[in-house]
Image 1 (tube, helix red, strand yellow):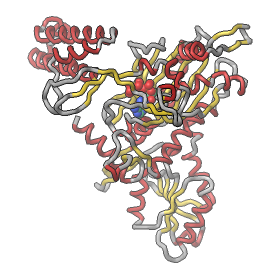
Image 2 (cartoon, rainbow, N blue to C red; image 1 turned 90 degrees about the vertical axis):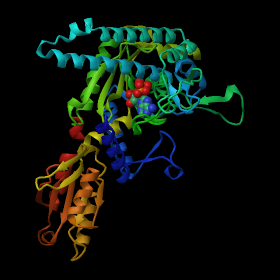
Image 3 (cartoon, rainbow, N blue to C red; image 1 turned 45 degrees about the horizontal axis):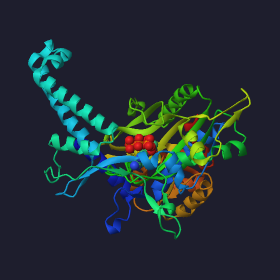
Length: 511
Ligand code: ATP
């Protein structure tokens, strides 16, 4: 646990030091769960967005992209179920004044009992050695049986209270389980309230309920309500997809863990519209496609796993998460959902407008079914950044911190450096920089010793460093250093662009 915390802390501090991510409003002591992307963070984020957009929109002739507004008609959120059901149950401790998610308090209590069982099993394994039969032990050990029964009872009671919207029951469960606030250590709890995660604001100068609008909690609804506009204007035929990248807002009750859970974040979503009955085929198709997309980044396939949902959201008939091994452990990175015809049907009913598609191939009108892929851009950023952040011990015993970002996503593709500022080397380096900057994001760097400059570029993930030295002035060759191997080779200035392009072009990821 401590190691995981340390890794996350290291990542946060590296991100700040080199201008990737800053806490928002820092000079005013920050604003909880909001972050700003600095110069290098903005570059990396743009490159991730562009890779996603290229692979989803440009590489598929049956997918188009849109950019819908954050504010939408409030009825949309009634229709989608967000006004009534996008809730988390919250509870406050009156002594510490700290707020918790009631469901999380109960889940953590259950987890503690699970750990007790785990310890009992470990004790048994030690005692019985090679003869230990774990299944038999769990079926017969009185302590394990008692604790398993406890978990079963708590979960059954908890499920019943949630199913019946019985918030008093959730409160009573917390009291009966003797759950105390980790800060104050007391059981002085308030009632449990449902807390809607949508931020609201007022439209224009008219006050009253009619003008209340929401900041969208997902980008998907902007796609659903534009379904026919897009289909008709782009002459799309089912099956087809609509993709969008944009901000979403959720008033998370407890938002921690850096950019993993924020109150303002960005989503990259694609809704794929299919014939009713064909949704499971497309669900499998997109599940495989999206996993392959993540693997294409080259961070290591062992860092990903999938988790199929057992309890499905009200709109879904199949759902799975792609999880990533973040510094805090495996957590959701992307959701892939088969959303049925729920959203389009709801919008048809709430707006009174037909949301049907005429399928010329089978001569039928229908509301299409939808398969959704939804990935958080900030979580993707954290996954790529944290997996690339490495402290290496080199052969000579020295250390270096390297950000081995996929070259196509690196903020700068190449750093141009004169060995010294004298003897016309700076001018020559500027010439090379001018030549390369049309094709690549290049950094010009002439401050400090070459060793220090190389380390700085390693730390921000620049795949190549080009050194202009005295020999350059004689024969127009330079040394080019590879970030990962740290090998240098001498090549002609005329060959630089091709060499850099060969390694850093996004084409390599797209293939
Ligand atoms: P979680 O269970 O972690 O709250 P979720 O299941 O509510 O996530 P979805 O509604 O499926 O998330 O949203 C799709 C994606 O949007 C998630 O996979 C995640 O990458 C991203 N996302 C959701 N909430 C946040 C948040 N508060 N901060 C950053 N990214 C988020």
